[in-house]
Length: 233
Image (cartoon, rainbow, N blue to C red):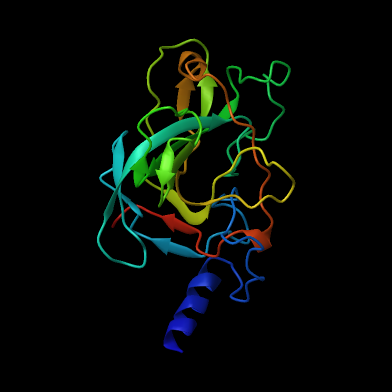
């Protein structure tokens, strides 16, 4: 009973009613979702000083389950970007009409969402690293962030920005739906919040294609564990 009372207090502190709606209609919660920390009522259920991601590099990370237990090393299995963006964090003009809408490709000034994916087992060859084909065995973690495209610039790898705050939740993979309301496979998310990130036009052009955006999922299809990870005191 004490645990239930504490949870109710925690939800109330974030403007969330403890009487949550029915659970997701899919086997696992779905993504994307609203992660705007300024939204009222808040979409967040919990706050924490601890991330599910530790010792992150461009090629690997250690996954720390919130339920406890030893860390698990995951390896990078792919990177892609979505245009337009999928999750909503409230950056200025993030949902404005795309400057690249005619061509279908992002133009300078447009927002894109970059996903770097990690898995317990990675396929060694014969797969497209700009899809999820190389991500062979879970758990799967998506390190995500949004950035504006700048004109020209230098090429080179896009590295997920370090630091906090983060939005973390249990959800699913995303991208174009084969049919409306499709249930996509489970994935964990660690999303670097912030509106000041930039990637160059040349970096974006090094990708062979982009993924379209999946619509925001309704309340009965998203998890109840959305956590804002703040800086440690």
